[in-house]
Length: 245
Image 1 (cartoon, rainbow, N blue to C red):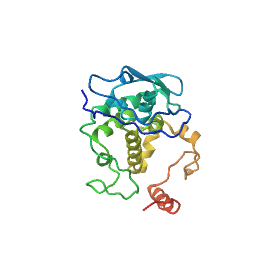
Image 2: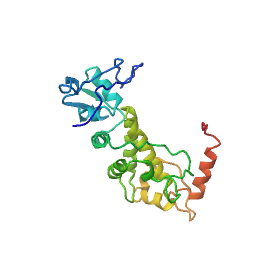
Image 3: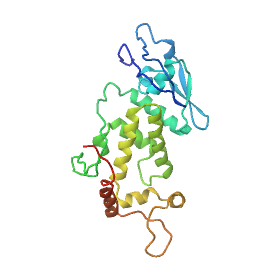
Image 4: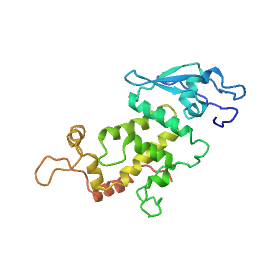
């Protein structure tokens, strides 16, 4: 049985938005005598394509999402997540179930990387995902969105959609975890690593983006920027981004 505080407050909502639930100032559930009816059974998430994905109404899972808490507070038993496909919702629920087993032992704070020179690894390389995220989070995302080479575009899209879905349902930890994971994977990669991600997918990449450099040999192969060019772009970005000190 999960160890939870006797009272679980839910953040007040001040606005109604399409796709979001409005809810009363405070919602409480009591552990004494068992869970109240609102937290029994399952809650159904509905994907953009209309497919249902169920979430157990386990307090250790529900407490991770302010959106789910709000839905249960007003007596809903299902809700549409229009920003996510069925597979993404399945990954979202799988993460919540996985994280529920680490709630008591996982106290590591997530810090978002803010520069390409941040020094967070013992080797001094920066952007070390194992230094920034809990082992359970790294293992889950490696398994969910693919660890090896190549890194298919479909898996990259899945990670980005999971990131957006986490933000939609108010799961701040997963949202930040996806952001750090993506930043680490992108900024720690060499040019050859990135080229490897697109193995077998270059035709699709060419169809969805006009970025890249022409082939020096006159061909139409889409080339990526060199490491030096990418660092130059990062430096130039500092001139247009308003970074609060």
